[in-house]
Length: 144
Ligand code: ZN
Image (cartoon, rainbow, N blue to C red; front, side):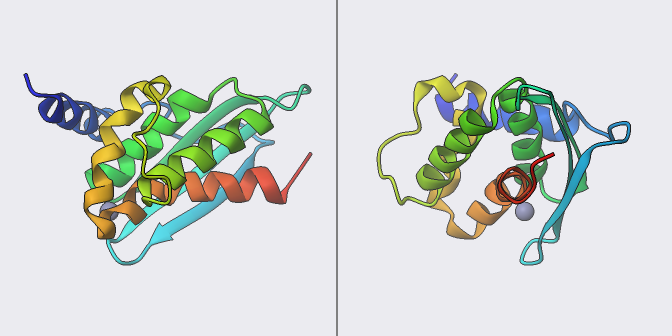
């Protein structure tokens, strides 16, 4: 199997069977994001714990496979991370996908490497970064 095929499988799997899909019990933080160019929508539900770590992160949304798989993969990757760790992961992911950082995405990103290929398709980068940008808003705007 070629790597490209593997990555395709990861994306389709997460798009069809999204992980951490649905709302969280109140109280939790919420943010909506949309990408009108493609019609993607995502709502994030976030709960931080007393140590400023992500205790729970879930999403709801609709749109293309890339946008929904990216949100699903993000929730898996970031659960349990501190606010600082999460912001660093968000920044790194964003800079690689936009091509700002030309190096390959670090191996530690695991299944998220499946999304690295979108940087060859600039119009899809917004699909892949939609949920990440929305989470950045939540993590930087509010603190409770
Ligand atoms: Zn899209």
